[in-house]
Image 1 (spheres, rainbow over the protein chains, first blue to last red):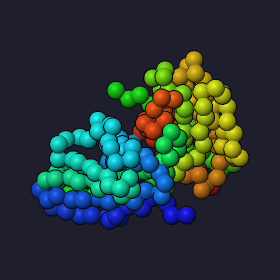
Image 2 (cartoon, helix red, strand yellow; image 1 turned 180 degrees about the vertical axis):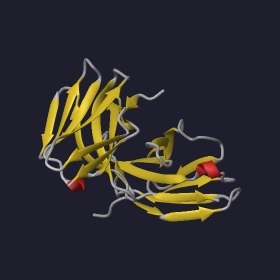
Image 3 (spheres, rainbow over the protein chains, first blue to last red; image 1 turned 90 degrees about the vertical axis):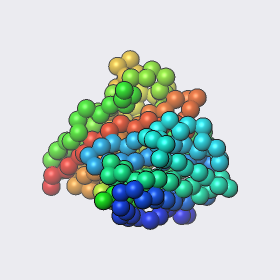
Length: 113
Length: 113
C-alpha cells in the first residue's frame, strides 16, 4: 500500500516568505508527527496530532511555526516569515494509535536563502 | 536535556564483522525502544524494537539488547554488510504514551567492503 508522502520534496525560498509543507499519512493511521533534521543534527520533534487535535505542540520552535490537520488525514506545517535557521529537512511520520512504530515520509528539504 | 543519547556520532566497521551501536536513556519510565535506519535523502525506516519485559530481541542479522538497570540498549548487526551503511536512530517511548517517541541524535555507520 501507499506509504507516507510529503510535498514538495524540495523548497527554496527567500528569507521572510511563508512556506507550507504537506504530509499525507498512511490511510488509517490516526497519529501524525512532524520532525525536522538540521544539517548534522538528529531528529527534532515538532508536533504530534492524534486525529485532528494536537495534544503536544511542545516542539514548535517559535510562534512562526504552526500546523493543522483536517479530516484526520492530511497535515500542513506552515512556517511564516522564514529565517535562514529554518533550513532543514522536515519529516512527517504516521502511526496507528497506541503503537510506537512510526512510518516516515521522504521529507521536504527546505532551504531559506 | 537529551533523554535519549547516542554518544558515538559515527562508527566504521569492516564488512563481515559485528557492528555495535549504543544508546543510553535517562527516563526510567521508558519501556519501549526502537531502532530506525536512515539512508541519505530518505525518511527513517523502522528496523527493530524491544519491550522492557525482554532483554533481547532478534531479527535476522539484527539483535537489540536492553539493560534496564543501566538504562542502556545496543543494536548488534552481524555480519555487517556495505548496504548497512546508514544513520541509525535509537528511540524510546513510555507505555502510557506510545505515540510520543523520543529520538536520539543518531549514529552514522560505515561498513567498509
